[in-house]
Length: 71
Picture 1 (cartoon, rainbow, N blue to C red):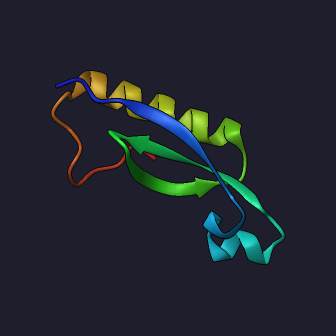
Picture 2: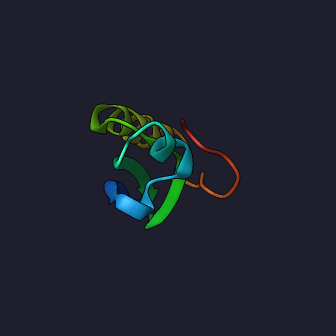
């Protein structure tokens, strides 16, 4: 099965408390097959780097998902 890796934006109350505490009201997350993987990122560029790392890792290990994360 081919995995789908996306970047999604979270706004307002969806932003983790730690980011909200420093005034961040928008963050980006990486989704693998619709499930959030890893941390929330303060910039879209960081999330895209993480997405690229996931894509590279999944290309090497197509069955990877359950317990590991790329970033």
